[in-house]
Picture 1 (tube, rainbow, N blue to C red):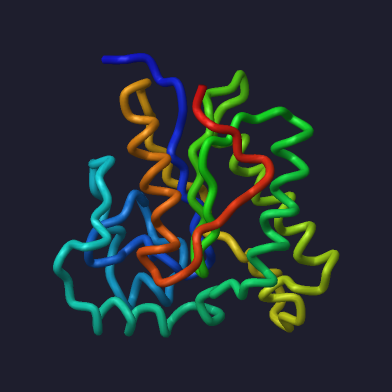
Picture 2 (cartoon, one colour):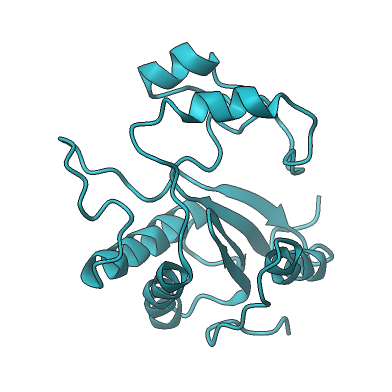
Length: 196
């Protein structure tokens, strides 16, 4: 097996991909009783390939989403810019090598070089920085949430694909083209560094 030199990470917004999604998920459990009753147990799969295009009952998936505590997060353009600014501070300060980055309305893609820190710790740090920036600018999707517990704009964890040297250029192209496939403009971020 080739050595891991980078990661393609996907950071999901709240409500983007549920643990009991009929296409499958990377979750082991459903943490919400309401979601469990509405959609059943976690649909754990063991693949590093996307199952987004897998055939499924779309109406059943959307029905389960109605049982979330709040509406699924859809970031606006201004919120996306704010998330990028928050994450940029960490990326630059920590000198993480990010080779591709794109924020979509309900998730973030990045290709990031392997680092001494674990990818899970890096992603947690990036989410925290983005959340802090959203609150500081009064743009957090749940800024005015009146529930007992504050809801995160992010899903728990992230999806991280380990990349060998031969995989990076494909992952970079995928991330760069992802906004275009969704009818959004190509994104340019100052902290993105080309593959050397």
